[in-house]
Length: 196
Image (cartoon, rainbow, N blue to C red; front, top):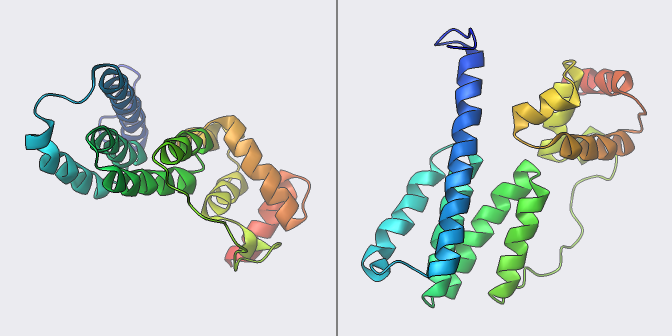
């Protein structure tokens, strides 16, 4: 409200969601650093089930950080207490969320943790997705394309998707190559033809 946003406006909701996501992400990161240094808390064994229940609750929340962060926290403590398979399953779940969102750095961190647990994800074989055209785009590339076609800048798209402008730029380079276009105007034309 200090910024002049109406309490129940889309702008206020977007701002509070972004602040909440940042605070939650910082809290999860701090929690993970403390756990890495101090080890699991004394009551871990008695609280293992509630921790896994927290992951189940987080699955119902649409926010990436809450869900993936809960998976990471629980996986870290499970792994430290010898529950490597369960930890691997939760890390794989977090990885899927990060990959879907295009959060490449976070996905890379999870892949490293999975390797540390001895989890081998197997070969990534050919995908049934076409190589070119609208159908070749990933879900994130489509979302970026739609937002750019609406006239949003890379920075605005990044804020909307909670990724960096560099990530948006990377997605756009892939989209341009897959759609055979060289600029945003041509992209907008392809998007409008594809969604009609």
